[in-house]
Length: 407
Image: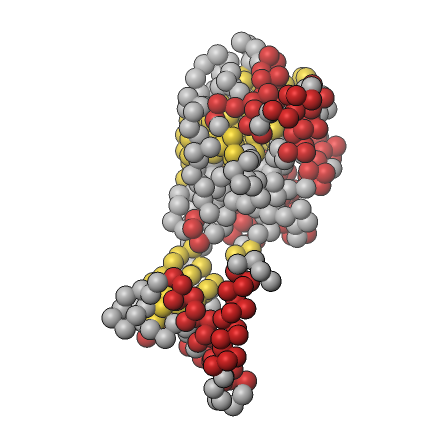
């Protein structure tokens, strides 16, 4: 069985208010072609299809049109689980209509996917948190764990625990318990897989993952994942990688494009595996194009920054621009000039430096930034008049109180 693993599409997500739907449409067109060229039998989307519970209508149209094209009239199966950004109900509501096209949807931990005919293939058996499928004579048992918040996870396993166990068990232990209870469904004559959307300990985050880990409480050790699974397809972390402590069986496919300045330059890929019952899988990493790169430019002066914008004005890229400056801020007219030259500037950030070009201590920079920004604003609003020192001191005092949580 040939399985194509992807995740974290985040359809509808913007970057500093700029839409990414055009890039996402290009990715999905390429991904559909990959599924066909690689003759995938099953496509797994391991969560975060959308970027919000209420995605734009265009994002939903793009998603369902893509699924229909991938399945080719039910020729191949597509399995989708919900991530922390997805609405479980919204995602799974289309299940009955998607069934005839060969699309399986799981919104919540413990979801039951109805048995029956899906496109040209069969769901032989299913129950809370698992599904058994048959594709071209081969059978696969897949354990499913859509984004497991504390409440969603507890709703599934608390009924099996006494009060002492409920108090003593950690989040990771409950994840382990969830999978342990289902691993008995695996058989020697089936391909044994797992799909989950969670944050594995020691995995390297990409930069824009949010909402799934609160103070580390939602981070799980790789040993919590099913020990008998041949391959574990994960979503949530945007950087492609193998998960530690899983004997090379668990992987994040990564996001198809950069969604944060910290993700600039990271490789983009999907994962194809070929696997048969009782045999190790063979993995192939398929690189994805960079549709519009996210870049971080660093200039030593406003003049150099203007030159960079001029030289690269025709390039199709998203740019975060950092400019070293002794005065600690960039004037509005300078910002307007640079944006007129390079329309895809996402942010222009001053980096205050001392007279000798040395960066100032963080506290000093913070105070200088605020003071000089306010002074410039005050001058503009008051015909060039300077603000009173007393007013500036009051502003700085209020700012410090706010940061200290005293307001």
